[in-house]
Image 1 (cartoon, rainbow, N blue to C red):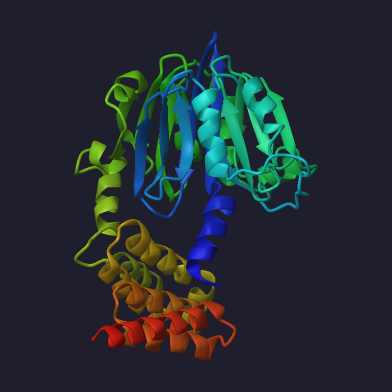
Image 2 (image 1 turned 60 degrees about the vertical axis):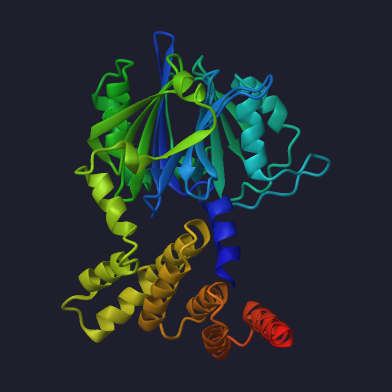
Length: 396
């Protein structure tokens, strides 16, 4: 299957919204929400969409594909989402079908309470949420969990949501399988919440994982967002929503907001080295295979997910950053490591296609087809290349 299709499925279903943890606390009438966003890429952004007519202004957080992974509007409504084990959700006949991106934008632009969100979502076919859960929190501390066909309101003072299905009958067993979630739960058992952003960030620190790219602490009553980068809780930046919305539509790459010497910025620069775009992957490969036997290396190749990571990073450079030569280098490295991976050769073929190097594109699509004769994408692209070459020949 073509990587763009894979990415659509993964980003909009599984990565709706990959791994993350969310802690909501209401203390003496004030609500603060913390969220860890876990993903492989450090290319995280925060962007602002001011109010339009009667709609609320919103700050969104996410990555450079601009799919909102989280948000807070000026009414104090907060949103985030979590990847969960897949469960079948029947299509909800008679309800409105909308892309998840449109749903999030409409909710954040128009509502201030989770009750309003629930009433709206009750009219929408949410059956696409087969492997993810959405969570909304408002200023009162009330929250809404959206899980496929289920819309569940809650009002606990302290609540942690992570990568589990809250209405599943095995939920308690599922929670215990998540070490980072249990660390947060145990921290709450041994530390008295005091309603401060510092306490909230301490909970998020307990629950971060190696791929936590950023943490945001939403103060729903003050209208502020405190950002931490790459699970470094020694540096933070405070965003004042009202002030930022006054600037109009704009955005920040999160790494640009932090000191160059901070851990997150160092990682960001290494990952995005335009002079050596494949260097990040090469370093992983060298570290994980050093001193290993041939059998151990083969096992690592088959179980590490490095092929998927290479594909993802290559498409990030090609699709989001529009740097095709960098993508060619990344896919070339990946095919050298995985010479039997049809999908990687398909991706390299597409990179050459975008570079208008049709000869190299034909070679790599052909290699992909030799490995997987059922790769219809490669067949389709080869036909299109032939048409492009013929069109160029006729012009000459």
